[in-house]
Image (cartoon, rainbow, N blue to C red; front, side):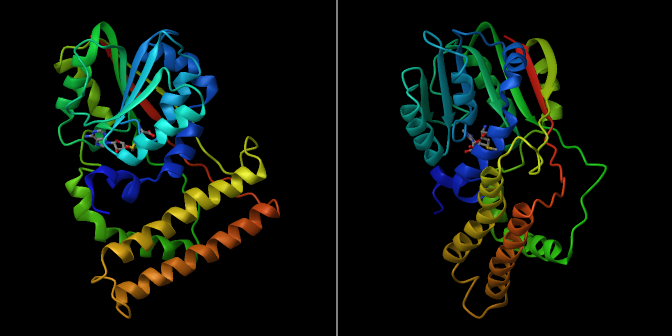
Length: 306
Ligand SMILES: C[S@@+](CC[C@H](N)C(=O)[O-])C[C@H]1O[C@@H](n2cnc3c(N)ncnc32)[C@H](O)[C@@H]1O
């Protein structure tokens, strides 16, 4: 459970959480923008660094084809095994490949790829400069290196929370403290904010640096999603991840969450409350009640030519 190789998928974001959220962000209508900004072409050799469960690599595989080649690398073996399995299932494994690798020591020769990119990785690596140097190294001269990430913007309007939401948030935050040392050890959120990437690209000698982006707000009441999809998102993204997290905590820290201890009581309270909220939201969804809560994740793309 404390293995290096499944840290992210165990403690930070599970496969369904990344697949669902990224699946919504990489919309088909953005294809042209990605091609333009990331320097892609139909037969490009592409590398996605820190690819997670491979959502973006499979998105690209719809538009890049052999002799083009797509590689995804990630430190988390659970993600890489899943991504490989999905590529097999989708019949694209001949040109979509994965490897377990550290982004700071990429297992590729100099100049292997036409386009090298990452999405929400630089924010989490201990040495962002080493990451970009590695991305530049494996990119061919004239190729494009791009770093993408989510901009930190404060929404002007926050949907009102009731006492149930507030209590769930309070308990969840408290329990999260138990894994703070682990997050620190793995540099979660301790790398470089995306806003500072252009300066780094400039310093490392990338040319024609361009700042672009994509914006794919999410609202569960959006007419894009059929009812079953909404129910699945509610369960897999909003309720199950909290339940899984609490159950893993109880198992991983038996002394801290001893039966009868205040910490254990709080964990049990949270487990109960998330299902109270889940049932309430499910009833609302089924009755057609809309909340129109919008989650915003504007993404910045910084790209440069080697
Ligand atoms: C926020 S997730 C993003 C995953 C994927 N890019 C996506 O958007 O779905 C960050 C990913 O970076 C990976 N990661 C963190 N540090 C890494 C490193 N040094 N080398 C390779 N992967 C790393 C994690 O395992 C995780 O999959």
